[in-house]
Image (tube, rainbow, N blue to C red; front, side, top):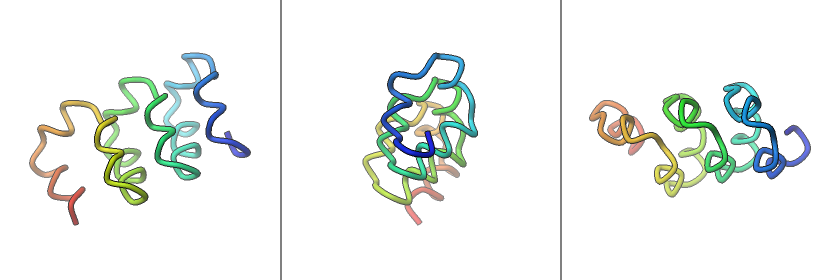
Length: 77
């Protein structure tokens, strides 16, 4: 993923579940979050990393994060 975040789209599900791999892809481009496994989309640190780049990343965050007032407050800072 260090060369092209789009590789996450084609990666094995096991790799899409790896927070470190997804984090590296998201650092390159927030859109990588779309291809992450559900449990990684629930990781507030990874989602916040994506949100630093573009507010639209929130659409790929897990519902539990979008419903968490503390997370949403942090996201809008």
